[in-house]
Image (cartoon, rainbow, N blue to C red; front, side):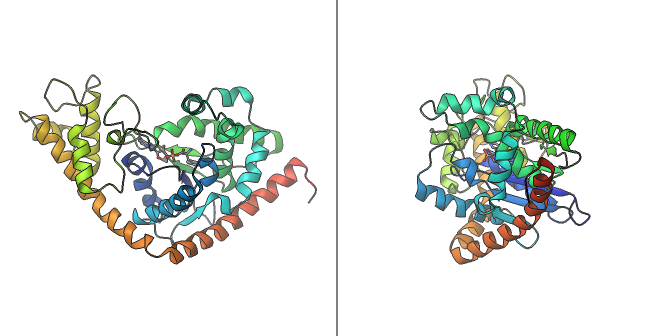
Length: 331
Ligand code: TYM
């Protein structure tokens, strides 16, 4: 709680161009909390360096991610928007929580296993302890609610376990956060391999629709999307490609799955895919326009990130002084 308001925290890594998975699973939902909650939305650049980044790209994407937050409806006056590395308490609490997070727990994290397979040449310690830094992000602000996609659920559960372990050892210190995982859009799948998650680090450009793709690119990618040989628009586990397209269409149009099945009854996949592509491109058009406007004024973005970091640091300091005292550090 901060000033009688419950607290929301979430973060996005500036590690690649953001996808409609990031948008539908997370960012699009952020603004619904702005009025009733105290909200912190962070660009988690410290997490991004667990995988090698080209410095110029990391810098550019940090600005872009902030601009996308704003283009997706986050008003900087109602939300604390900031960059993780601008508030050193994240790294500091991250280290401390490393010492309350077990090797066995971290070894069970599926994201670590996936990423160590993908980056076998760079299985660094940060990749392994990544979830403890994520726990620090969340616990620093006494967070009640964390809006994320389903892929972050395991990290959230670990965050809760670490918080409870710390509270048990030292008395109440951290709020215990809950996830806010939207069931309709919690896992948007790849367009070319619809049994795996759409991911910003996918090398196959046709697998992924980026928030900032042009209308033509979006329509082309949906046209190529993998479906099946049945030629009927029906939501079913054995039809992962079609079901994923229906999920995306539902998210952009607000139509129900039954309505969608009816709308395309007796029609081919060609017509269906075109409709999905158009709904997605039209839904994203205002975000793209606003993004372009925001990116043209870097000084404004810098003033937003500076004000956000000052505000976040103020609340982070309050938690840190409590943590330091409880652990036994000399003041
Ligand atoms: P990241 O940067 O991978 O993704 C950002 C958000 O997008 C969601 N997401 C998806 N949702 C639905 N379908 C998809 N295909 C899809 N792909 C990504 C993610 O679940 C996430 O909500 N570890 C986090 C960043 C982070 C964080 C935090 C999040 C660091 N500290 C504290 C919340 C709270 C991550 O890698 O997200």
